[in-house]
Image 1 (cartoon, rainbow, N blue to C red):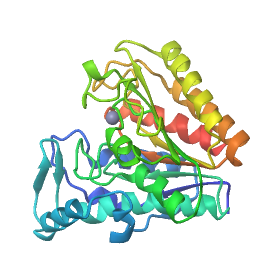
Image 2: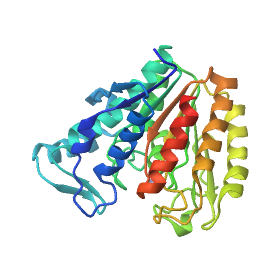
Image 3: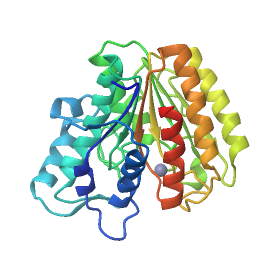
Image 4: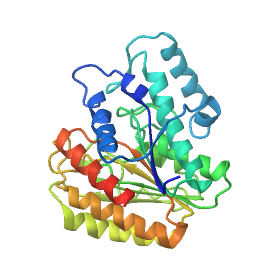
Length: 307
Ligand SMILES: [Zn+2]
């Protein structure tokens, strides 16, 4: 098998959030289109099962979700997280795809995997859906690697413009994990968490808030700090929450990143992965709500992962 593969599934398009929601199927169609154009190897995502989801979610939350899904109708899990009859399958493919990517990388079948699914996952906490997210895909993937593959140190890096509060919540008390997130500073962007003072129960969280209006130079300074911390942690696997909404064209935030910045950051992560963990990277699609920004950012990320 190739050293770089992608995991996706067309049923993730069946998560119908309505015509006016930011997180709509065109996003995944865009990324799947890039994968086709670049002729990257594709594996179909598998669904996560209940046991997989229980790795990082409270049983009462999962039961409440099942009751909503069983009604087979449109419903709101919170003010901006909408579900439809196709959402149970789509969200289980998102979580399952992330776990499957960990399996591929840890079995040596691939070195790097990109998981192109929706809905995204990094805002879903142990106990609730939030911010378009239902299951905490990257947090679950980290716990899967620790609990089922017996790894001792797994890092999750999150460069989506919003703080990965859900992943932080899922990994907060997990000393074998390191969570590093860059995002627009909490005072000026939803969800309002992600201050530097939030460091995890075991000093296992590093938040890198960035000022609105900042661009490449501030991003590089923050991530040089973050990647030094990552390298000192000596991860055995690096998982990435890859959101493309810090791009200057995406009006959901005030950061001014460009395609070149996603290229730089992905390469910098690859350099640490080569030195620490034989190049093992699992990256999962998170946000990105402007067509140009998502296409440019994801293309740069995929090219840097695939080369
Ligand atoms: Zn985001």
